[in-house]
Image 1: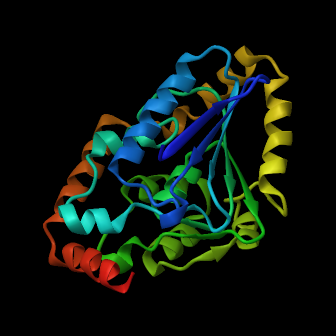
Image 2: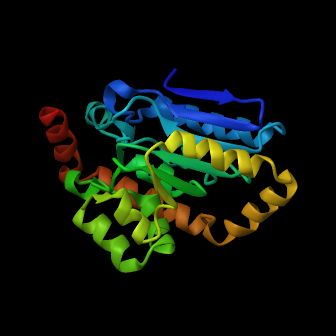
Amino acid sequence: MSILLDKRANGVAWVTINRPQVLNALDIPAKERLGEIWQEIADDEQVRVAVLTGAGEKAFCAGSDIKEINRTGRMVSTETLMRAIPSVGVPLFKPVIAAMHGYCIGMGMTLALHCDLRLAATNAVIGYPEVKHGMISGVSAMRLPQLIPNAFAMEMMLMARNISAEEGKRIGLINAVVEDVQGEADKWTSTIASYSPAAVQATKRLAIFPRRISETENTEIAAARTWIETKDDYKDGAAAFEQKA
């Protein structure tokens, strides 16, 4: 399975991106499965909090599978994309913690960005390289400037500059930088799971209200993604990436 779901007895669900052979890059089936999992977690009263992480030692998630994009000439549908991102396409009021290590790039960073808390290992590499490949990170382009100062957000996305976990913490993107990120996630989730689920979920529901994506914003994202797909830079970027790989 490209995405694993492990529901534990303490009310914690672990969601693991399981494509380590490609640095956990997400193809379309993996994105579809993520959407199904967020819906399952939302519907399961026994689950109180979730962790999103990546299999292997090298990456949380290195983004979308650009080789797949090169073969098909298209990105995933906007609807499938939105559902794959926690608390965006699927209403989800249970907290999700990103346990990040290694490469956390592009779509991987979009997933982490929309988690409620972000824990990073000391080796985490964070960035949005999309413009290098003639692509965009439409959802993050709207969300990132809401979370960190606009100057930092624009620099990360327009310069395609990677940052370290420590720099991410300094600018307010990362909650904590630790050696054992999964062990730390265990501690944080155990604490949250011990609290009133109604109080926790009501708190998250109110906290994320200002960043819910409106129909207008959804339309703008879809239009921008469709426009990008018509450009030679997009096609050339995907082809060049596959040749380099």
